[in-house]
Each structure stands twice: as structure tokens, then as C-alpha cells.
Image (cartoon, rainbow, N blue to C red):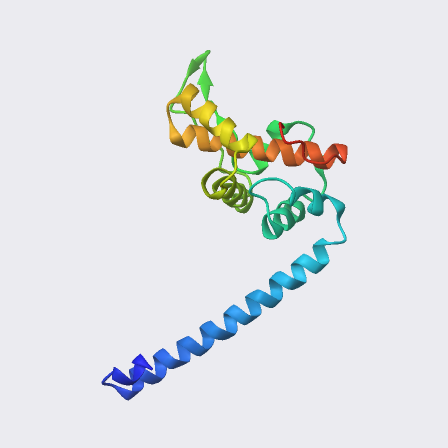
Amino acid sequence: MWTERLPDAAIRAMVEQLFRMLDRTMKVKKQAKALMVALGSKYPEIERFCRMPGIKDVVSCTFSGYVQDPGRFRTIRTLWKYCDLAVVHRTSCGKLVGREHLNKDGNSILKYVLGVAFNRAVGKCKEDNSFKRYYEESLKRTGSKTHARLNTQRRIALVLWQMWRKGEEYRIGA
């Protein structure tokens, strides 16, 4: 092994210990994912979510786990706020004060998870899908990759929320 080339025995022992810890961590991570998938199979929305482009087991289980019940959110805007995707507009006497920015009062894990779904659906997915088309349209409209990405993340959250609330399957043109 390359660690044998390290000149100091103490450093070599520490590096080997770190590799053993990494191996154990990877094994535990794999077991945790298998357990999560097994527990998630009890929930019909998770199976439906996995049929969407960009959504796999971890994303669907995490979204379902954090949202818990789609009825918690009266409107999609309240869900976007919970997902750290809502835009804050501060005004005084009808005039905008400061710059628009994202609300940071929500759950940043959901924002991250929706970002993973975006990257898979738009960046890594080879076939055409509704989220890729929505991103391209949003990019043309806004001229900003960041705004187009956030709009698409909001769209993914909207589709997940509506599917879950209505108990529907993913529709390709959604």
C-alpha cells in the first residue's frame, strides 16, 4: 500500500486508521440507505416520487420525511418558504427597500434535496423531460442561471406537493 512510503510510523498509523474509519463509514452509509429504502416502501408517495425525473430514493424519502404531510401547507408559497426557496420583498411606503433575497427561515436540507433533484433532472438526465424544458424556458425569460435554477427547484417542489396532495402519479408534461 502507498502508506508504506510514509516516513513516519506514527503518521502511517494515523492514515491507516483514517482509511479503516472511512471503510466502516461507507459500510454504515450503505446499511442506512438500505434501511431508509425499506422503511420508505411503506409510503405510497415515495414510490410515486421515484418515477419523476431526477428523483430517487434518498430525495423522495427526505422530502417526505421533512414535509410529513402535504396538508401542512395551505399554499405552495408556504411550502417554498419552508424549503428556503421563497423570495423576500421588503417595502416601506410602497417602495422596495434593499435587495430581494431568499428567505432563510425554512429548512435548508429541503433546499439542498431539491437542488440534488434539479441537478439530476436537468444536468445528468440524458432524455428530455419537463424540468429540463422548464429550466430552459426560465433561463430565456430571466437571463440568469441562478434564477432559472431556483424557479426549477420551486417547480419540482410544486409537482411533488401536488402529486402527494392529490394522490396522483407523475404526468410527463407536468
